[in-house]
Length: 237
Image (cartoon, rainbow, N blue to C red; front, top):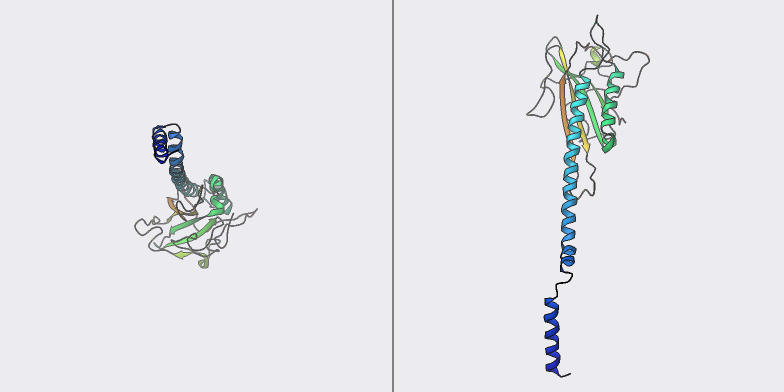
């Protein structure tokens, strides 16, 4: 085959190849598939992140609300808040957060912010649930000792908090001679796919409710049979 014939043959083959559209859709799909998958995965991760945010917000609200209502009621005396009652409302949070490992990857702090008859505001006691501890997971809005509130002594009266608790622009204070159940949740988000999509995210929510009933604020009671107090000195699951 002469050089001219070879050139004409290549030109004709090239024209046929350029005119052939078979498999174009498959090739285009193959090229676009990685982009579509990446967008789908990122969208699913964002949706899951938003869902976990909503769930943690609801858990904080429910815990604060429940803690503001519980106690041993009596028609003749003030309502006594017991360690058993606190453990009971924490159990609700444990069950609500089970699907996304809230207890293993987070920390819940329940604080009793109270104002006494002398108009002195303090964090009377705190109880915690969750295995995450340390900076970023312990309460950032005030702490008190592990024994605070365990009895009615002055030594266990808690820590002064004259400015209340909460973010700078959204602090809450207790009413005179009453209290507020203040909840703080810090949760290390566990991604569906990879941390590279959203990075290391710590979800934070707070909630507070004024104590509903005529509560005895002198201490947390622990009558027989006694239960273990869920203090904030260590991981609590």
